[in-house]
Length: 170
Length: 188
Image (cartoon, rainbow over all chains, first blue to last red; front, side, top):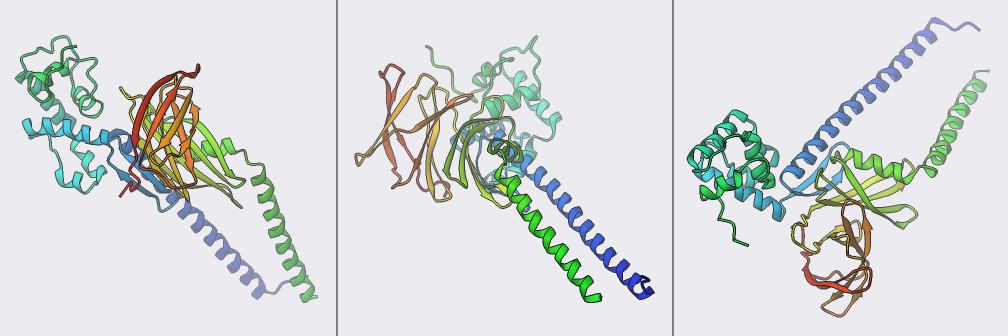
């Protein structure tokens, strides 16, 4: 059986169309999956750090996640604001917080040099010493996000500075 | 001759579609639910999660109770999966932050699909919980154990805003009585 040139060309054209459609479809799908994975990772990170409640409506493209502040979120924001009131170089992005744009909110913690400056100033202003303690911006973040006092004497510092009220004697 | 060729090609394509449909069905029939849950939780990109209970609503619908967020596992979630021709598929998930600290138990209300679900963490020493609502209804929620202990109630009748929770230990002694309030309008 001998195919005419016309048929050969037609077969090649049809095959090429199929292959292009196939490649386009899977290329787009792979890109969407990557974007989906990254978005979900961001939501997961932000929900964990800010103790947010979350409703996942779609985990496929386009991702649909709603985040809501919990009671624990309010406590984080309170600690943050108390420090920011005294050390305004630590930005407290009120409008982004009100708009619940958590990814934008988190940009306030991007500059670690600035955070190091804030914690150093806090220790300088307080009457307690930090000698022998590895105090860094991590100490500040641990305090704001987890109210973690261990591995430093940040609790004494925030009480000394009047950021937190003194412990009740047990 | 030409007609015959067309028929053969068409028949082959139809046969391939039918066979692949049944192949899909067969694969999905035997899909392991635990693997599917693991995969869907992985898709959510939660950092290390823990499964407390898997509840089948019917043959094709399942609710998974889990908690996540390393190292405290204080984000308590419930996820609905549905069986479709593509296998088990994600429908919806709700995650709530509930830190135990000094509390005996915590609880939140959430709607998922057509179901009202109450759930929260409680201590491991609690062996049984009795819920008594203001209008006299009584429920015994299920308990699931993993990193923490989680109680959950899949409610088919009217949800309630407030109820007394009586916590018992394994000897049947009352450990604690507590009133919990639920925000039925959450998240609005």
